[in-house]
Image (cartoon, rainbow, N blue to C red):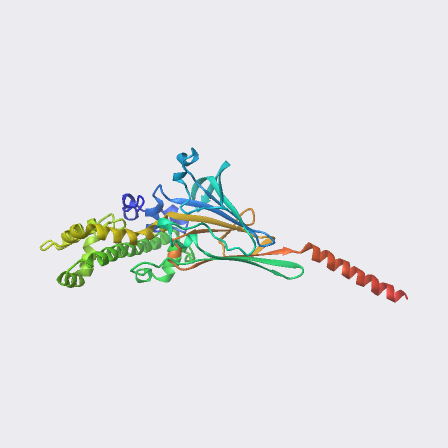
Length: 375
């Protein structure tokens, strides 16, 4: 896992200033703070432009490091495969992209055009990003003709991230998740201090949930190698063991099986057995844990997605409309912990030719009526 452990203490030891919480209700949760603190976070500024014939241009801008700009293509800023017809190039004029208060310097561009009816995609998910819902939304574009106007619709559904042994609902209400993860449904009439206290309470619940998942993943893997008497003991002492293992300022996020076994043996001090089992099967245990831990890499990607449609956008699920009239969303896996995320924008374009034709026809009819009355 990329640079996770060195930041695992952050969600417990640091508290944002109240003014920061007031400034942005979309408070980054504990998991996101841990991950976004890493220098390996990848931010992408993506623009989807739908044309009148339903062909689609897609541009994805990223922040490349100096080695990539110098010609080392092994350090690509894109955590997904971009094969032909994707074209990747360096921007002549880099720009700063806003990610809800955080700024990234965009200096590399990947772009391509999708033909009408062609399946849209972000990129080919490979390696640790395989299965990441951010890279495989269900996308569609369509239009409907209404004589005077043509309506265009773009729709994408990003599937929720739910592959965890402990469901988030067990630690946090749905209303709490909506506020904490989506930044929505903020209580009206609350002061900044009251809101900060509520967010801090939700943060504590979220930390407990992340710890519970790390605990369960480690325990389920190691339990495969334990004799029956130790399995019965773990079943009896499960809750107390969890309390002991997580009684640490750094929390459990990033704790590997070896560290977990050491902490567990501190609890079973009279008859430690976990580290011995780990030492015997360490290669298999580490391999199984690495496979389960891959899901954390999903949280290292974040997108700002702008959608531009012909005409004027009249309806959208976007929380923001840019100065250029495009609908704008921020999409990341923290938001997908709550539920599927539906991205929808509808626009209307006036058919000028239809207006002209109608005017000519009406004028012709009017002239015919007037002429008939003169006869």
